[in-house]
Length: 99
Image (cartoon, rainbow, N blue to C red; front, top):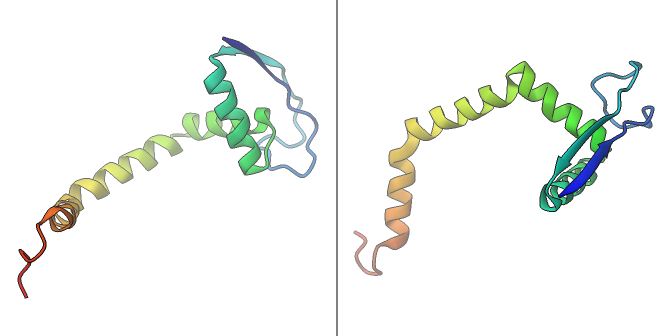
């Protein structure tokens, strides 16, 4: 287990949901794997860990994440037959396809 202390420094060009607002220090204990994933993903996005986690919490609390997952599920349900056909075509033996 790794203790991940979240410090959000004053904004330095990074996108932050609460620019200009006072920052609060939080502490969380997470597995090393989760800590590494958070660090890598934050770096990929050019964010501090604090700003990355703030974005995740904001998206979750606003319902954005749930709406995105629901939208993806509806899309897959509506188009499942297309995906099934494409998968079947990939697995069909050569020469079995109609000309």
